Image (cartoon, rainbow, N blue to C red):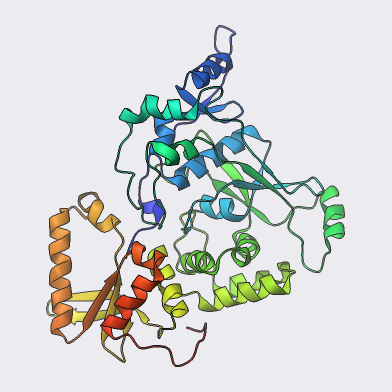
Length: 401
């Protein structure tokens, strides 16, 4: 299994605000000059970050920093869609590409691109200026399936383009047209909301206390049908499995009641299909994506989280095909790369224990097949592994569990 990003401490991003100083001057001018000199970056109006903080942070942390800066920059914003999911600490296959929030303006859905983070400084020069200070360990796969951008080169320059803000019109209530919704919004209507502490994760240092997001059930009904199917299943598995860092809990019944907020038959079909396929027994994004890939490739769906007695120990496996005696294990990197921090044992000890565990499973007559994020990105590689292990094809294609 792999770990939820809320359990993995990424780089800290300190938000630097422009403020009036005790002598009556303002720090904004000094910070502007530092931006143009390539020493700090402008995240939002009046909010800055250090270059090294930004470039060394994983993508989801940059998105949260931009969200916090937006909270500081706007009056009581209401965050929605993927940004609301990220604020809840729900595992996503990839970091949101924009900070998403509601707007009261009619026809106001649009993308607001930020001012250049480097001001008048050339981004390539900023990368070169700070390159030798950056840690190289981010040139590896993180545990939600994305990659940390490298400290230099094209990925670093892309990271300095900043994160835009996407404004969305208010979601339509049940049995309400868009013109009717606009009239309701002008009269003060707001969709169901909840308040979150933006600092609910220990590693999040932003100088922001609380934020408003739409009700989690509404966010899911508004967002999941618009996602790629695999991404939506990853989110629903996490929610139904209780892997929500904010602590909000939802059941299938609790999610189904939001169907009336979905007005498109196409989106409603996608929502029901994703909800039917969701399984709370999937313990990570990697396991959820594995189930989707296994289904897409036409293989029989496995049983999840089956335990086997191995002498004095018990092994719980990610996937099991009882008809052919095959055990499947998804291998994320975190349990190896951060073994000492997470379990108090060395990487070598973790690898040795995994070997002994696998040997014991094989001794019971089971076949063991393992795969990684790279295999999930190249379904042909996963298909070859499953075929070689003897995993059978499904007798009929179905999205049922």
